[in-house]
Length: 334
Image (tube, rainbow, N blue to C red; front, top):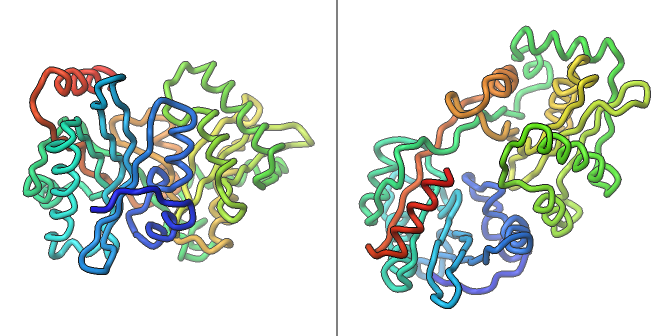
């Protein structure tokens, strides 16, 4: 394992072709997280001979003066060839992480892996010395295959969902898309109003979104879709991209927009736009059968994507008062 400073282009070149890549493992997300909070970002690659076989971006939060604390790895480590038929390389990568952070640095190491939930996935981490951190399920979502034709995608929509889309089109809802500061301001205004109204907690703060957008190159700026009717704004959504995947990150629709099914219209047009831009997958940004609010879950399932469920979080640490307190704090906050 080699830990060092990686430049933006170098890091993204390393991880861009990994099938399990997520937004949380991009260089810009790590930098934005560090800039807008109390985290520090740490990046490592794993090498076997002269070949880079994997990578992991970690977020670090330490206790002042002690230089110890939490190492949080979300949706990594990433395996370059995604070949888990012989998982020895992945086990060795995990052992290196545990050895460095938990055994040598005596930090509390917690990982939310990118692996699909299964007994085999947990066996890989057990072989590397990790334990289940919680019985809670891992991340779950649905993903739409954009390799299908637009006609197939529309035909595959749930009937009531398609009716809502038809309604919005009959009512002459329109949209504007782009990555300009003007459109981003409109979206963040909607988003802040939604957070204030609902009181929902989120790790995806408006400040984090703004910081990430400022860091992204023009070719990978997050895309804003703003819906309008007769010039009046109805709501907006935000789509991020990484590798061959795009993800629905934020959606905020006002009362008029909900009446005319603006969110159905915006998501559908985002699917069509991202397909045109050559992306393979459209991730709906979270759809857990138990944890996602029923209305949101029902809306996302209307696109009839493929469901997936990742394994739950795992941990490694040396027993001691500080690590026990960190673990307890995490569980309480969840």
